[in-house]
Length: 270
Length: 355
Ligand SMILES: Nc1ncnc2c1ncn2[C@@H]1O[C@H](COP(=O)(O)OP(=O)(O)OP(=O)(O)O)[C@@H](O)[C@H]1O
Ligand SMILES: [Mg+2]
Image (cartoon, rainbow over all chains, first blue to last red; front, side, top):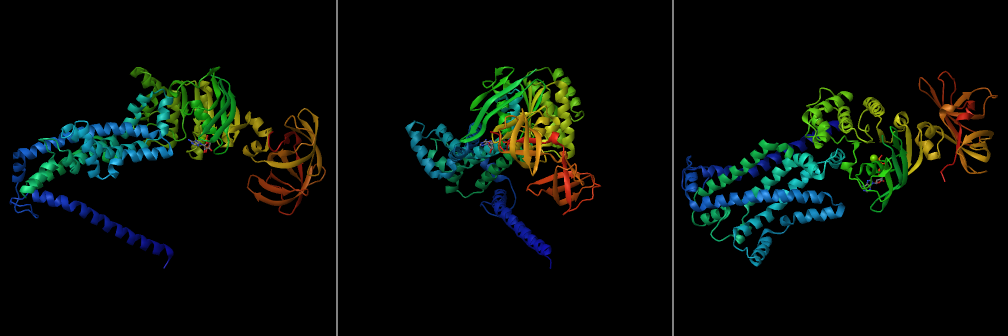
């Protein structure tokens, strides 16, 4: 048997192993989604899979519950503000970080992603004390702060990755053709990083929508985010309403990604 | 109408000295080439001119005025990059019209000027393509058009042909030279290809480790190099150690080389008995079989038949080797004893390293 044939055989078994791994990964990722969506469509009284009959009654029930709908609206509002603020600030931070050299740039990156590295609970506790100090404890503004802080790294990573793809020579070319810094940003940089910027905003939104620990600690008086409201709900009732709420969250995420796809094209976002 | 004077330019990156006193001049309409091996500071010089780097010392005068305090977006220099640096999200026409758009020109004016310059660089018909939808040669012509459409005071080109294949390189090279001469724009051109530098420049600066080793016309650089480094970098060269250097007139010396006493031209100012080398370009050597016209005699080490010519290497009895090109119908082979005639008017005496 020749070397080439052996290599080829080896190559094939590697490819096969890889395919199996990918399929396993997909199953692993999709099983919870399929289960929860299936369970939300049940006609029975319990969260179960496969669903017992098909109906949309638990969606009706969800929208009839004021506490859950309020939670959804609050999460949407906080998420939207988080997305806008983090992506704007992250864009500026990424531009600032670009000019740094070697070691300084590494430290800067680390600083910008610190909220990812510190356990969420610690950040939450620290923030709680801090917010009380500045008299924002138990307020929606305080909670909004927390969400922006926790979601910032997602926006930053996505945007700075997009910015790194823009060759420095484009900026130089633009300057040599007479553009000011602002003109270069608006006409060259921004259009080129737009997919990454949009993706960063979506990541920040989804992350904010999903935050639990920090929301629990910074929970404003008389207000709940959807995850908190859901958890309260599940403490007393184990009804498929929760599955319906989860499905709505999933649809919102898919909707967000689809929107980016439609607006700027997902392939270009990565 | 632009003259440029680079005076004793110095630039360091952190603690590495990239430019160690570069001085150059360019007269109106001249194309000045910066030639040298990788890392000698060609791009750094050009980037200081463009305003992308701030030099640590020295000055750059354009039409007699220092431009060091003028930011790159107000220098009105056209820059052409090795990697083209086209804006990938803009069409060819938008790329070329970018500078005019920044100047807030009317739509009509932009359209006509873009159209005209596209005709000039033979890109007509590609207006609506994106950069990734055209070939490398076309992309480089877009980059050229984008710079030229603004009628820059100075054109700066950093290895504009390096990413093109040999055939395209020739085509774009002549296009650049023609346009530059037609429009009378002063230009600086960076390359590490000596034949490119020879063919298209008015003046060549051969750079060596952050300095200019020689700044002269292509002919002078080739025929009268200031030191061995320059001769080596500008083409095939033979060097023989010269002994008993004796000045006989300004720039003329009698020397003893490989057993023969000859009189040659050389770098002015060499002292009596100075350490020097004789440069013999292969084309100034001729193979001869009879002894009477020969200056040297030697033994053929190898001979390669290349069809149109014969490339031979010959060892001299006193030490030293000579490479030369002979007509193909010479019948010589390894081990043969041959004579070599030198065209003495093209031999050149120079120091190994310039003082
Ligand atoms: N941004 C930088 N930081 C540190 N050192 C640099 C930087 N840019 C260039 N250098 C160094 O300065 C020297 C000159 O660089 P330059 O780019 O001018 O060379 P070059 O002559 O253009 O070479 P090449 O033909 O490879 O493009 C090199 O030794 C290079 O390593
Ligand atoms: Mg270079």
